[in-house]
Length: 275
Image 1 (cartoon, rainbow, N blue to C red):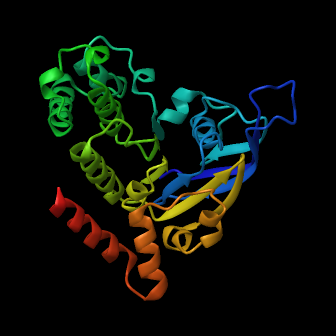
Image 2 (image 1 turned 180 degrees about the horizontal axis):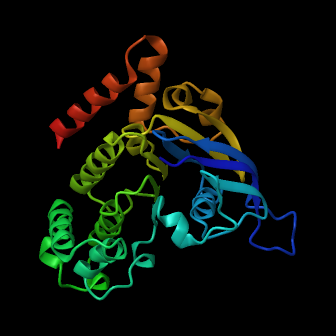
């Protein structure tokens, strides 16, 4: 499975203004099996970093490697054989005339037989509540339906690394939980990895084992998720904001040796019981 190495990466959208960097000297490694929560305020550079990993942007300085491939030299098509990205704006992914064709496209490029494609498409469409829309235009779907289609069209490809930008935007409670279930299922496959940029820290706590915090273009903290919840300075400076759930988990684990995953599980069961 793929390893991603981010090596002293800086990036500026305005090449003639060399000091106007959106990202500044970021170094980080994403190993097979990692589930990384990418956190930071609006404008901190999270989405830019995701686009750099995908090869949609090229570093102004530094390198990003996927295994031995330099993303500055590799095509987006080559990168997409190992890494797939779900964009924050679903419509940026769509180009087919129907939902069925949108879900089928990547599978056809991989040379799967028509019968196998039809089976996979219908299975995924049912799972994501899209089966009745298979012959409808993606652009005629509601906001939540478009979001589900954008997720389904990537999950169906079963990439080695899944990159997701704000995955819960536009999803109601039911499909937010479905998204968590889908990601957990994806991560159960040996050594697959995940990078999620989100403001929804409660969502992230349910799927991530590591976290990286970006502020003003710089990587200001990285480590495991449990350690992040104990990092009072990150929250006290306003770089991140606690929710009721994250604050509660933080207090519980800081005052005892309670297992983090058990605490998350109990809170999930309580939340579901109240709905």
